[in-house]
Image (cartoon, rainbow, N blue to C red):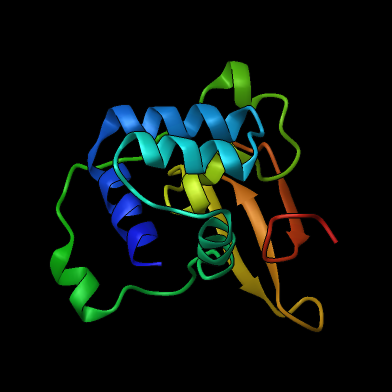
Length: 141
C-alpha cells in the first residue's frame, strides 16, 4: 500500500500522469491498466492496492481540520466541468470525482444525509446536472 500512496502523491503533482489517469478512468479502464501505468512510472502497485485505496477513500464530508485549514493555499481549483461532457450526466461519474475519488470537481458535492437509514449521501452538482441520494460509491439508491 506504500507504493500506492506514493503513486497517488506522484499523480497529484504530475499533470501529465493525472491526465493519463483521467483518460483511463473516463474510458472505464480495468485496474490492470492502472497497474501497468503505475509500473511505467516506477511504482509496484497491485490491483488489490487499487481496490483497497478506493474503499479507503470514501467521499469526504464536513469541515476542514485546523491542520488542513492551515495547509490551504488560495487560487487552486479543480473545475472539471465541461458542458459537452457533463451535460449528459444524471449521476456522479469519473469526471466529477477523479482518480480514486480524490480530485473532485468544484461543482460536485457529496454530503452524508439522514434522509435514509444507513450510510447514504446526497450527491449534487452545482451546475444542476444531478441531485440524488446514493451509496458511498455514487450509485443511486
